[in-house]
Length: 150
Image 1 (tube, rainbow, N blue to C red):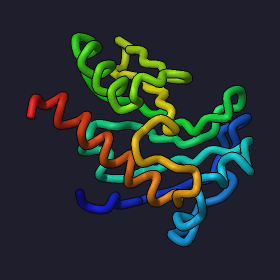
Image 2: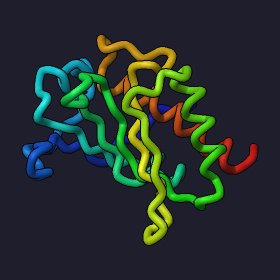
Image 3: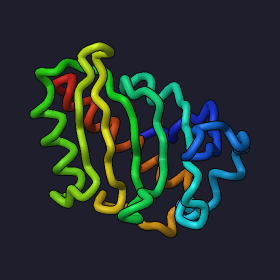
Image 4: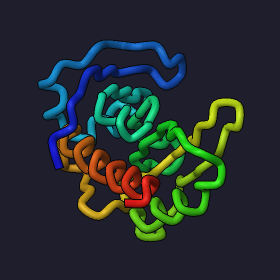
């Protein structure tokens, strides 16, 4: 799979959702554990590759309560895709569902997905932010293919 193209990477405050600073490409080489050391922050990622998967507003953070790495995003789709989306993600999480949630907003036609990264095969907290995003890119690519019936 091609490397994920990052258009924008922002470090934001969880409490206010305000941008603390724009991150440059060198920040991608930081370990993902940066988020555990800076638990009051989250990363907002914009990428044309995510757009092609119909993923909206990707955020990476560490859950304040459980201390798990999380990917939070919107996924454009139809309500009837519920079972297929849930099954695919549960398989990716190897049935370790702590922190996983999936809800549909009829108004926006958008699935709101909270997906823990820790159980995904290949994830390790010593990975760089870039490696973590690439792993997520591969999972979302698989989800997109599954939704398209390929």
